[in-house]
Image (cartoon, rainbow, N blue to C red):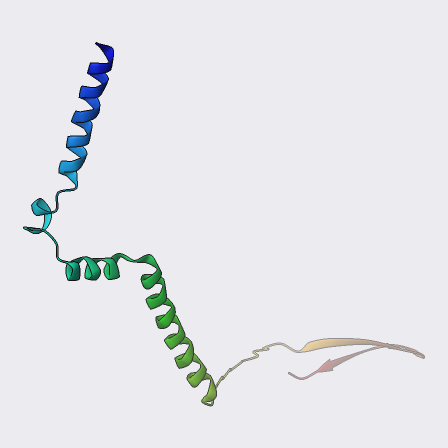
Length: 104
């Protein structure tokens, strides 16, 4: 009795999996060989990676071409020193110390 139950469950599971693989429900009919080949080309990971590698190589070529061109650089700066008061300078030399005022 147990074997018959296991066999019945196995048969039911196989019929469900066979229905899941039915292509008529997805595409409206059985697939032709050409449709299968086109689908394989679209879904193939190796081909996708190849397409990405080609795009990366094209970008590298453009970068290399751009690096041959001269570059132009320009910079500018401006500064302002505002000293409204005189600074007192204090210096020490060998003979003594002196203090002087410098104009700004």
